[in-house]
Length: 216
Length: 120
Length: 98
Image (cartoon, rainbow over all chains, first blue to last red; front, side, top):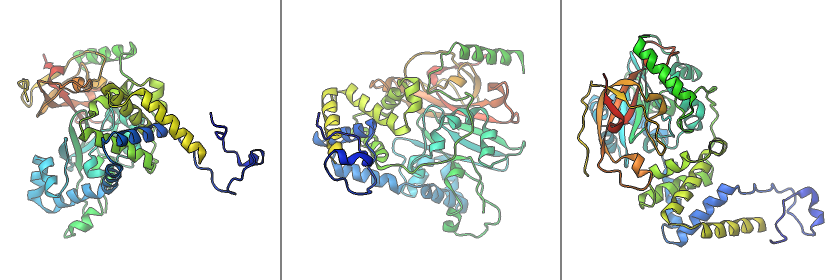
């Protein structure tokens, strides 16, 4: 074991006889699993399974996927009734028209109405329409959400500031297989004549999961 | 509630008490409020995700295998580990199961990386 | 891809089998033993219980969306009677409801 391996302690560097850069923030030591990630990646690159460039591009593609994509789909559905019909009949094919590829998954778009509100959860893990919304928020993957969204969804919605009347059916979708769900929220009142772009800016991630409704 | 339904619910609750539910299968269990704070994904976390995508594209793992390996984590490990810690643990285990990597080469690589980091 | 024939039509009443196998199971605990209605056939897919062990999972199993009434699932459900939940369930977990 190298004698250089020691815990960085700036208060005591005088004991070691070498200079530490003054007042530089000590980099966080890599955790066990971070070291594992580096090892796996470097080994696979060395074995020509993929290249460093492949990894970089995959991370970039991930960064490029944001809820703005889903918002575009919603805004198009709000302004184009024929598109909306196609979207509800075959979500996978419809979003491909806008350039979004669901890969191995099938997209099911569920429409909110005055009497029906949809909520999406994956109780078993964290299935999420990443191709349209990017990476899921921490709370979607949390124990509290996964446990309670199926059993007391109205209480969960209240925590997000959403209150549904007793005349509204709340339908929860537990995404247990290869379907991925996107909620098509109700178009807010007072948006008549708005452009698609202006409408898309109203559509946040949370209303496409179903914990909130879209507001002006 | 009709008698037949009451029986089905009671049945479920009895089975619940005998503790057969798998740890990750948490739908319907009591829990506290949903914590709303979110964190920006760190680069290493995005790389774990990228690893999964690249390996799945190359048919070197299936998402179902990853899920099974995560589900097989001991309950306290499942709860204490972060989301992407669970994923990298599961990816690595899957690659071991598939014979893409060996423990020996992983062990050596990880030690070398730790030494490299300590030298900085 | 070889597939099992679908047994159930939309609207059919079905019961989720009560079974408790080890392994990778995509039928959530809270739905086992419960009765619901077929909302639609989603298609046939390789069985994830087998895919999890790097086996092909064929013949493909029909996958259904099954709708349940929340008040029938939870003794303490606080919402209206119309509230529902839909879960995707593979055919081998379903039997006709009596």
